[in-house]
Image (cartoon, rainbow, N blue to C red; front, side, top):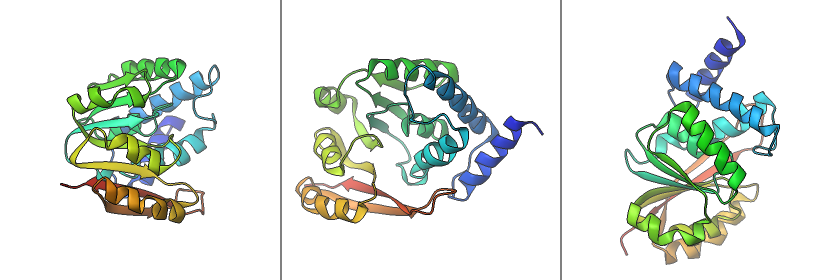
Length: 222
């Protein structure tokens, strides 16, 4: 068995630990994505690491954790997409979703466009603008889910997202080390924007002892 076959098998196995099923074809796309990211990372800083194991364990797997809890259909907006985490990884796992990747850095958008074309992904579009300038456009497009791994502070994500998030829509927030403080800080803001905690996902990643948390907030009727 060659390295790529072993890696594909390992990715599928690791993902299955979190209740996520990937096909061999989806694992192949993840492998191509990782290859491309490592190559581009030599020229521009996309991921902060080119270590293959770290990319798989800390970035790819982390991006897949919320997949079982997403809505069964709809449009997803990813704020500060960077190298495509979590949006491109989610798209590979959920090809039915329509996704817009909001990224202000032109070089990172060039990478996103290249890898989307390479992987032949459809209904996914990088937007080279700041999210603050796009509220009306996204509201018109229709936004059912919002993700962001790059933006600091769940408060900022809530303030920006609630300008365009549909009723019943989800905000998927990846919390940092101070997760309890973050959750306490947003309680009043969440209520102000008619958001309720839909799901708290506590998990740890391979070779990492620190527990991590994803919070999913759902917008209610006022």
